[in-house]
Image (cartoon, rainbow, N blue to C red):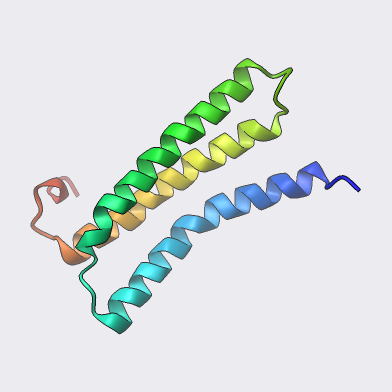
Length: 109
């Protein structure tokens, strides 16, 4: 039995929307209970954000250009990855405000 495409699309979009909030929740729990300096996570958050943005744009662009080869579902997967990438910027800014308030890249906040 083939899965329903609408349900798959809703699932992908929900995961993409929830991932940044789960990330900030996990980081907040780690910071609160283990009293860890989260500055070491900044390069990883920035890398995940840029990789998600690049891969999401590539997937959405390829799916839009070759719409006969790829179904429309892949356009939404790419857009979901791009929106997740934008959401990870919120987590990154939270870590910067909390643990590195006087860093040079934090002056624009």
